[in-house]
Image (cartoon, rainbow, N blue to C red; front, side):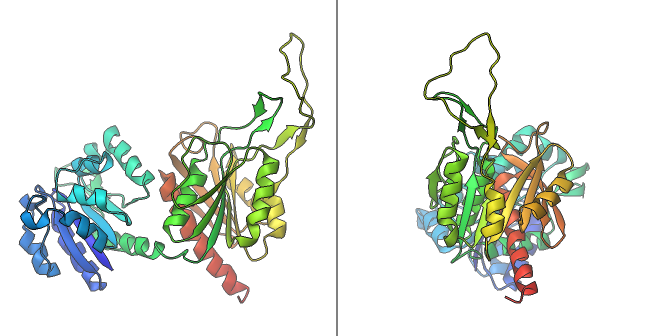
Length: 399
């Protein structure tokens, strides 16, 4: 594969030379792009000698007038290592004032970013906000390691080891095609169950996790059908999006499209109850107490568990206590292959947040915790494990 290696201006820039060597050992073609600050730490000649290619540095060189566009089109992945706090801020905010940042805006493939900086700079709210922004775009962030830093401090901020970055790059390259030829059905968002023509029962689901899953599946080559309750999110590019309002509508659309799907991910937070008889007119406010007769809504996940056939079924469980125990219970009672469980209620992850922290309960008996990360990154991790699980289940069933 053809890899762009962007080198930022930090003391860890020397490790990028080792990363370039590792990538070439894996038979990748490597094109290095350096910022001006990076050239203060490592000479371009070092990378030119390692890769056998001219190092790109100057946006305003005559031959580079539109070279950033050409280079972006010709390569399969962009890796930035080290990514300094300044460089990540420019990438996050779309500032294009050198070859690397301009190239980034023209590049449409997968991006891997390996930060490196002082511990206080890494932990600063501004840097963490930029990390979240880049993660929401679907970029792979290779977390910095902890230890003794060049500034004399100890803590997180040192560049991940070149071997770890090379493996993250390999993982991203594999992801680009691992769902080609597949159809993935995703449900997302809440449902709204009417109480009268102007009121309804719903929940706090924003739909962000389901939409992140749809984006991730599309990025990995799948044909994606997204069935979404009412949310304030733009439909993901390249995804067939079907809008519904109630649990009954979602149930009907899901089973209309189920025969097409190889993987179903039931991320929607469907309301559990609906009003048994909805008035035709708005209910007027009075001083008297009003009682509502509520009936259960269709249990879409349980019905999917009965009718899924060879389809891989992934359910979600939003819990306020006994997380793993409830995930296991749901896995068995709904006949899922995987349940993605997260704590909600008093946390700053989950509903309405751009981040999540979950545990995956698998049909094989495994439980895999996924540390707090942007929902787009969590989405890719879910697909990573789902594909491994499907292979294990197919092998055990002799398929």
